[in-house]
Image 1 (spheres, one colour):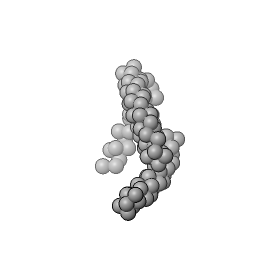
Image 2 (cartoon, helix red, strand yellow):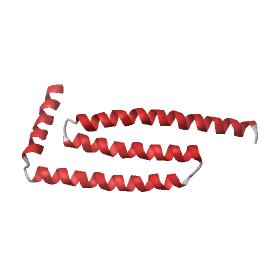
Image 3 (cartoon, helix red, strand yellow):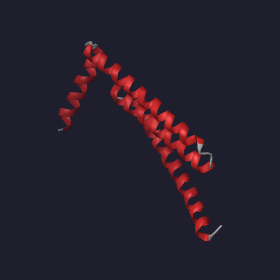
Image 4 (cartoon, one colour):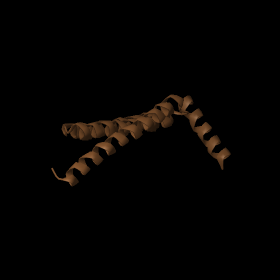
Length: 118
C-alpha cells in the first residue's frame, strides 16, 4: 500500500465520521420539526427529510464498514420514502378538497403568518 493509498483511506474514514456527526445533528433538528410542527405539511416534509437522513446514515455506514450492500438498501429506502411522501401529499390534498376544517384552519394560519412576515 502506497502512502497515497494510506492517506486516501485515512481521509475517507475521517470524512465518513464527520458526515455521521453532521447527520446526527440534522436528525435531531428534524425530529424537533416533526414534534413542533406547526402544520401537517411541515411534518410531512420533515418526515421526508428524515428518510433522506436515514439514507445518508445507511450509505455512510456502508462506506465505513466496506459492506456495500448497504448502498442497495439505501436506494430501496429512497424509493419507499418517495412513495410515502406522495401518499401523504395525496392525503393532505384530499383533506383540503373535502373542506376538512382542520386543514382549512392550517391554511388560513399559514396565509396569516406569510402576510405578517412581509
